[in-house]
Length: 172
Image (cartoon, rainbow, N blue to C red; front, side):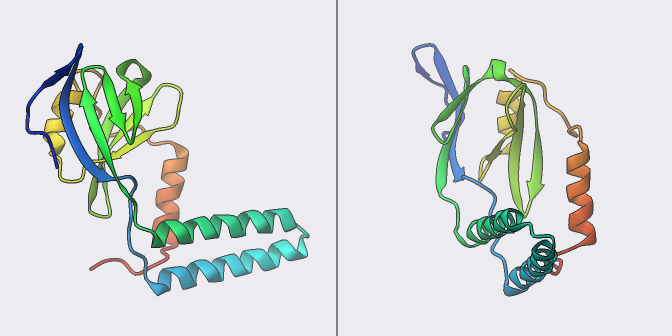
């Protein structure tokens, strides 16, 4: 699963850590989750039919289909590498100069490293069985580590919505 603390050299690149993990977060959903989504979408579509917003109905149904697929199809495992030149994730290489900072989050029992680039969207890498402290040690040599990331209004709104409108029963 991981390459133990060895540093391998290929040219002028040193590989600090290498591991395999799922490509995205995944949580098996139960029937209640899909019934709740279907009820919300049905009500939204009825409203949109009266407003004659057929393109918006198609968009909503497309998003629901995407949610269904992502909730039922498990992710594939991909390889990740932290090197002296940057981070390679799922065959894409990102140079250290592209990144502003990074932090760790945990969701659904999975630990992930979130790396914030200057210009593009966040890069989220699941750690799988890899040690968070070990990865932090290597990545913090190149980009700043944040204990708590800056939360945007979108992050706050998403957290508020998920607390106020739960689509499934909380895990006990």
